Amino acid sequence: MAEISITKARMIIRKALATGRELGLKPLSVVVLDAGGHVKAFEREDGASPGRFGIAHGKAYGSVMLGMAGKAQMARAEAQPFFMAAINGVYGGQVVPVPGGVLLRDKKGAVIGAVGVTGDTSDNDVIAAMAGIAAAGLTGEA
Amino acid sequence: MAEISITKARMIIRKALATGRELGLKPLSVVVLDAGGHVKAFEREDGASPGRFGIAHGKAYGSVMLGMAGKAQMARAEAQPFFMAAINGVYGGQVVPVPGGVLLRDKKGAVIGAVGVTGDTSDNDVIAAMAGIAAAGLTGEA
Amino acid sequence: MAEISITKARMIIRKALATGRELGLKPLSVVVLDAGGHVKAFEREDGASPGRFGIAHGKAYGSVMLGMAGKAQMARAEAQPFFMAAINGVYGGQVVPVPGGVLLRDKKGAVIGAVGVTGDTSDNDVIAAMAGIAAAGLTGEA
Amino acid sequence: MAEISITKARMIIRKALATGRELGLKPLSVVVLDAGGHVKAFEREDGASPGRFGIAHGKAYGSVMLGMAGKAQMARAEAQPFFMAAINGVYGGQVVPVPGGVLLRDKKGAVIGAVGVTGDTSDNDVIAAMAGIAAAGLTGEA
Image: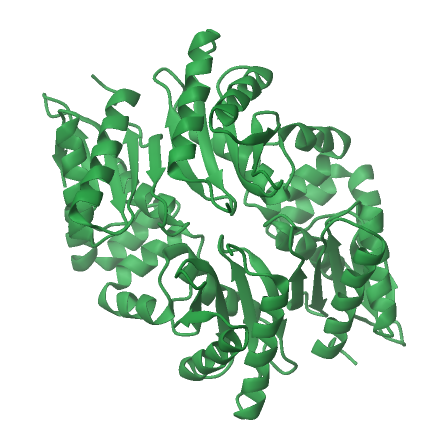
């Protein structure tokens, strides 16, 4: 399985948003990218600020392109700010290196895409993402 | 009503995709933007080429930003190619002036967003978009 | 098989370049992209002009992103110049819509990447690309 | 000798990748640029993340354009982050100032290109690059 299906992508988004409602989080936005970093599906809840697509996308896009999830990206950005700044030059400013970007892996461990969640704290964004990924029967690396 | 709700956006996307399946169209991608031209929801069917988000987005984005749907944009592009080229300079190259970009209007006629569909011929893209918009109880201007 | 392997990519490039030498073509440049449009391998022959990476890449990149090979892209560019200009805005100016961009398909017909060849006439570029693709046991759509 | 030949470029890439396999490094990506900073050859191993071309390229490109290899660039970035940020403005965001960008010199000391390696730690990337450069009979400055 090399591509995340639209059915799986929908399951991830629905469960991530439902988790946000259950936990009383702020309105969330969730994107699912495929293994090439291209948008498969996205939803922004009512009440979320208009620019949330770009943030959700940036969390997931950097994860795919670097093969490194949000937490590892943030650690690198804290250790070498100039490196993540340079990475953003390479990728056209499309990388948001904080938690909430989660790599999707299939059963063999291959990356098949990424999820990006934004709206509440980065830690809560991760909780919502992981709930969605579990509901779809996939493994997430946050 | 100034903002398209996520519930309505989902209805539009589901019915547009279902219409594509009923008519035997190629895999479709559908985006819904709000009244500010910002992404509300998107889905890309399995089998669609990876770059389809940008095309769906460009059809809808130009519609909102110019207040002019895809067919009118194409007419203008044919009459004055330099004008649409200049528009694309203004909007960072994000406008795709062909049918498939459809303005969403509420009952008073106010623009509340736009839908962009890509994947089959431009005419079939419009058919799918209009079916989705009708299912959501809204009025589309193609 | 969803990703073109580096072994296959090398076979394509070597045979494409060898074909250019056999036919006495000008120095060629050959890129192989994966199913997400990302560079897998590239070689530029001695004597080729320095900017050839961008042209080879642009032929292959547009093929993957649009799911449409170079000949179909050129037909569309001739019929609707403003459409291909808009597409280039969406994809950051990275699309070169002429023959020499060839889609790679696996045995089930799924796109697994693309080859881009530049250096001689577009028709000869295609001949070299197709020879390389055949040598790797894959099917090309020019 | 002002241009790195494709034969030498292949030798560098092959030995760099072989070194990575011998040392058990993560999948590597290796680019060779000519004296003008233009891509001569590139290979990305199976399993490497899709965005690795840009990083390998950025390491080598900055080396050629500044005449300063990766280690010197990193020292400058640490001492004057604003300088490397400005440099990236000048060069369109295409400079990645960390080890793994290695200048290629001929026997007289003239710069004839650069190698960029990415995939493992920056230090291991340098080891792979230097092994490839030695195998091609050239001198590297890391």
